[in-house]
Image (cartoon, rainbow, N blue to C red):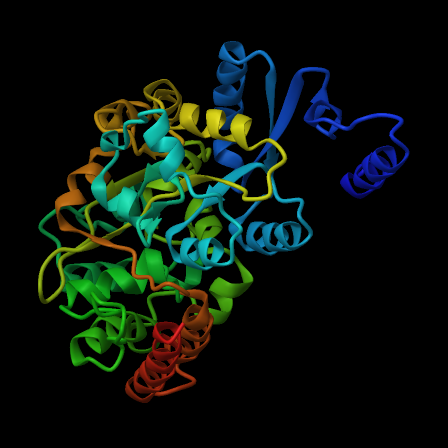
Length: 423
């Protein structure tokens, strides 16, 4: 029975006084039992999320949780937006930093602050930066789930065959570029490094390593016309167009660079801790990971983390909150850590995650936290991020001049931020 049909039937029942419709009659209810839905996008994390859901139901036998996987974030967000517009989004779902402002301002997320206070839920177990990321105008909308940093993944076998020393914490941009040139072998279809125009994994990191910025701390000004920011972008443009030690932008758009790295076609690739489980499980891939190389102004890595949120129109808000509380518990975070899925947000469990895949030096990701920079965002990141991706992809491909493109992007972004400030 659909929600719409159920609503019509309930309306009819009220009119004729024949029966009442309670929460227990809603779809997802079975007598006193309720089934809530949990929206996620990462197939690698689904087993851990299902195990957490099972453990939750053991403690709450009247609440079943259905984990709903939409593979890939590119598919997840449009589907979630459509569902939310139709009033049928999952009761609980994953949220990220760039989108929480827009979703909260549109009333799609249930504020959690009052429930947190009423239940004395201890949010101090999570890094303050992650709590702050999901707090807007004094209201917290999400409970931190995990966090991630970026590392320099490399193929040990390709390095050894080329006689190139493995990367380590002493590497700079120059070391990486020199190694990438040596490792590029067109005859074998091998590139030294992958340089897709990706923000979180690539150019946001180099922007801050060069001393630049994406958005000012007050969220009012773009940093894209800052010379240091442009220097952080130019590293990748030079690797693509001058060194030719990366597949082209078109090639990385046609074939996911993650697959290229897994298939031994990339010797190096900047990627997040969230893909460790995929690389660890790739047969034939002898992967290592090192800290990101230092730029002209030193070290930097982007840090970000997801949160679990409650859909504002959930038919089962109390049960959804109970599940979100459990997701934020030490027990649930330990399951995440032991599975290797992600670095748990719960303080003190990082080492458990590090030990989950002993053949990889995952401590690299945790040790970089002191150099971490929060993922750049504004209240409505979507108002400028699509243009950012469009323009920088053109600059990375060599189709547009980098300096002019950066200035064009800064102007666009400043206009969007001004409108955002006006409400």
